[in-house]
Each structure stands twice: as structure tokens, then as C-alpha cells.
Image 1 (tube, rainbow, N blue to C red):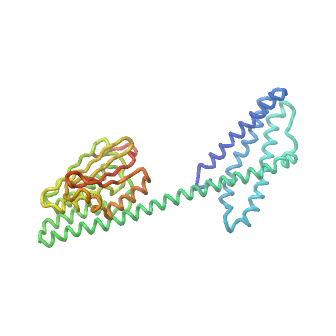
Image 2: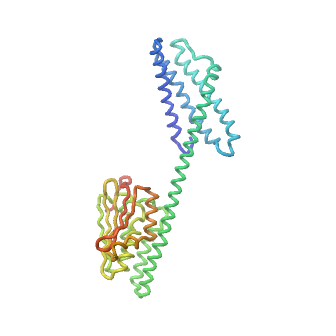
Image 3: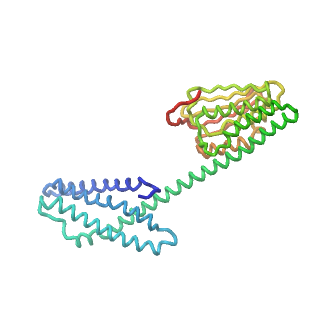
Length: 358
């Protein structure tokens, strides 16, 4: 059957059970209300089974619908094909009803449902209407599937573009930091930073990484990135991780915390001469996972949030909106000490069971 929706035709075929049950029920009630002799179980089976015959024909309609779609430019040539097919399937439906009636009713009442020609012409108008109704369902399912697939592809392309925008931004900042060390002629430190940058870029530039990863992997990457920054800032950077071990399995957008940390370093640590505390938190809040990056950098409280908005945060907001719609958020607020806290809230989800690093 069609690869676009391999199980849809099964559902449509199964839907014929509804008319079959109603037809049998209608026959039974007509006999009861009309004071007629009670109908036999075989008569009820024939009344319902006649509808189920079209369940067997439904896959044929689906295949014809994909082989000869009704779309602009093809209507003139394909409509006659479907009209002819509807008559042929109507004949098959009538023949099936005759055969079923002969098998179920002949030995019980001596009654056969009638000649094929009479039965065919009796059911022809309704049979043609049923064919085009099923064909319409097939076309609706096809275009709905195509629209969903296109939407998913566009979202994937958008996410990929957003992530690729962040990579050059991240690389530029890292190389700029190494340049400063090289100008100071600190060869040993520059060499160590280049080695660490290579390890980080190996993770960043991988094209096979999924859009979401376990939080444990994101934390591992963030620790590598902070190791690179600690070489640059020496003992001025004091990162603290406060992650609830119970949420380490949670799925998070790949590369979601690094822009928040970079923002905190740029507007916090870079503007201080003394040590700066950088706190990375993670916890579950009902149906949500809450991630936060807090620093104690300087700055007026009423200007911190506005001054810190940049490409990284805007990019992250777009990614969250694309992945989760209105179910996710990113907020940046100032703290009483003059620093800021960036908080990401996303739906809490876990991947399939498996080992996880803590």
C-alpha cells in the first residue's frame, strides 16, 4: 500500500464495521417493530457482511487514488478513469453481495438475493458515491500527511540553520580569547586552549547530532566549554553545578546552555576584576524541566536584562519556539546582587530507558 500512509487504509477499511453493525441492527429492529417474523442470524450476517465487502475494496481505491491523483492538470484525464473504476468496483461489490447472500441464505430460506444485473443497477448510484467518498478520504489523508511532513521538514531546516548560526559565533569568541593569550606570548596556555577548543568543536560540528539530547550530555559539553573559559579567566571563574540527579535523563535542546553561559561570562565575568560565581541549575517543576544560569556580575538592576539581550539568546528563543511552541520559554531577569539569571522552561520528557551519566 502507499508508503505515505502505510496504515491509513487499514483504519478506513476498519471503519466499515460501523455501517455493517448499523445495517444489521436496522434489519433486526425493522422486523421487531413491523411485527414480522424474527430475522435469522444469517440474514443479519448478510446485511452487515455486504458492507464489509467494500472494506476489502478500500485498498484498491487508495492505490488508484495515488496512481491517478485528482489535481490541477490531471483532472480531465483522471476523472474518467476514476468514474470507470467506480463502476467496476460497484460491480465487484454487487457480485460479492450476491455470493455472500447465496452462501448464507440459500440453505436456510431458499432465498437468493436476486440476479446480478438487478442488484448491480440497484446499487450503482450509491456505489459510485461511495467510491468517490473513499477517494476523497484518500486524497485528504495524503495531503494532510504531506502537509505534516513538509511542516516537520521546514522546522528541521529552521533548527539546523539556527544551530549553524551559533557555531561561527561560538568559534569567533573562542578564537578571539586564544588570540589574546597568544599576544601575551603565553604559548603553554594557548596550546592548552587550542587542544580544548578542538575537543569542543568536535562535538559542536557533528552533523549527526539530534535536535534533543539527554541533559547529562549537555552538561558534559558545558563542562568542556567552561574548562576552555577557565584557562582564559584563570581563577576568576567559579562555576557551580546544581543539577538534580533525577533530571539528568531529561531531553533538552542540543547546545541550549552554552549561549546562556556565554552571555553570563560576557556581561558578568568580563566586567569584573574579582572572582565571579556562575551557577548552573536544573530541576523538575511539575510537568516542566527548569534550567537556569545565574551570575553575580555588576550592573544596574533595571538595565541588566535589556543590555544582555543578544544573538545567542534570540537564537535560543527561536529554537525553543520551533521545538515546543508555546510550551517553552526563556526569561532573563536581574538579581538583587546586580547580576542576572537566565531561565529556560521546557516540557519534561525522557528518552527510552538506558544508562545515563550523572
